[in-house]
Length: 114
Image (cartoon, rainbow, N blue to C red; front, side, top):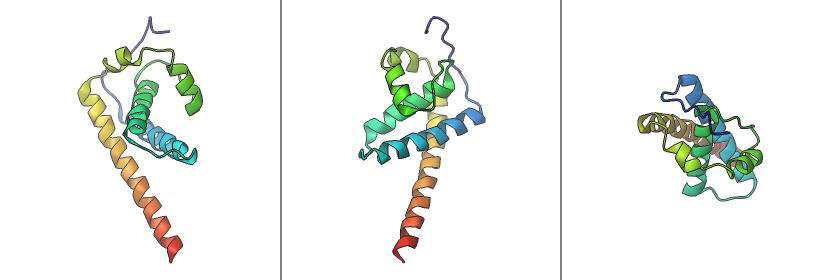
């Protein structure tokens, strides 16, 4: 699978948007499982979206299938090949998207309490 690995050296805005959307979706999915979201979860989901949208490794949208598939790969060797500035740019966009979701949830919670 990794013999012909292609890693994008620059992310398009569409890729970053997809990363952010999937990141938020996966975090919400983990929360639905009853898991407390911590830094480990955030790092793991960032790695998943980087691989899903920044490489030619085909991954489904199902988080459990992704986790099962990625267990067989040497992720560190893949992740080290991403340019740090592109990872940082994607992460900044993801943090913004996550912040918007948190604000939306907070407003909904406050409206429910009224």
